[in-house]
Image 1 (spheres, rainbow, N blue to C red):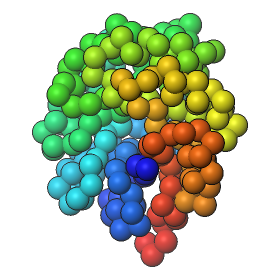
Image 2 (image 1 turned 120 degrees about the vertical axis):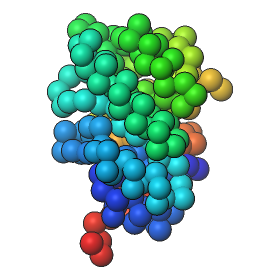
Image 3 (image 1 turned 90 degrees about the vertical axis):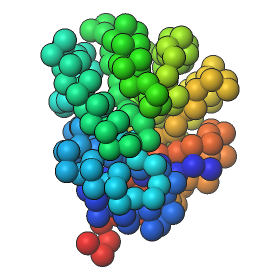
Image 4 (image 1 turned 90 degrees about the horizontal axis):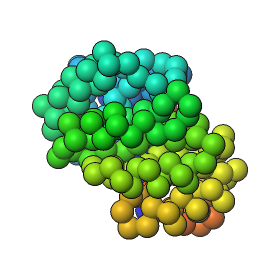
Length: 210
């Protein structure tokens, strides 16, 4: 089982590593579901951590329909992730009618190469997240999909998550999120069959001892 801890400071990142996280998703502004981290935070995390760092590429809060200028800002953020030897990037783009924005997702996935791309929880806004998996399977470079199965929590979305895992097959890893805690991770893993899980408190409270 791979545990990915979602963090927004170097202190939280180091604490997650100490507590047994296998990988970090590095963000700023988690109150708005995570935005691109600052250059300083990115450099420190990639330099000081021993575990892989996945970098959130999201230029603003709100919806996931992005303008041409925002796409360019995302490219710049991807350049910075590459320059710091990050392990990969995390992004998600939708069309106005809540479908996967396949053209811009393909563009950014190609731009990010050779870094692997995680498509984030924007997929949970789709009417049918399983259809979203089907679309993302057609885009080279998409390695993971972060999801709670279209529901508020992984336990509520477990049936859809299982369908997404079946649809993804061996091609894409379904990274399960949604109130995944150190206290319920085994239960969620058993009910969904997921091999990789993600959460703010997946290895415990990261604010202790700060």
